Length: 149
Image (tube, helix red, strand yellow):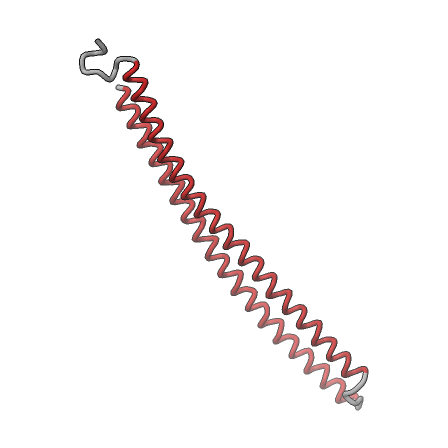
């Protein structure tokens, strides 16, 4: 009877381990997908920002030209400063997307490692369970054909 219990316990542990591994795999895939989305989202945010900046800069240039102010000195410096600030903002958008992507990719790698760890732990646990139960059965006399005598 102890043999059956040992085998049943090992099979149950194996099924539990398989479920945990499958969950880790799905989680890892979702995190990797989200990492790609973060990268794409940052690229789209950058594109939108650049487009809005060009539109604003064109509006500023038009306003300066309509007012009759020459595009030199302070007006020119203001436009250059706007461009410098916009480039800093674009760099921050890129870095934010890259940071998010790397974070999610790292979480995906950690999830894959967790799945492997669970797999190893379950395998060793099932083997230990069988050995312990069989050892107890043999020690108790349940493992011999003659009933322990």
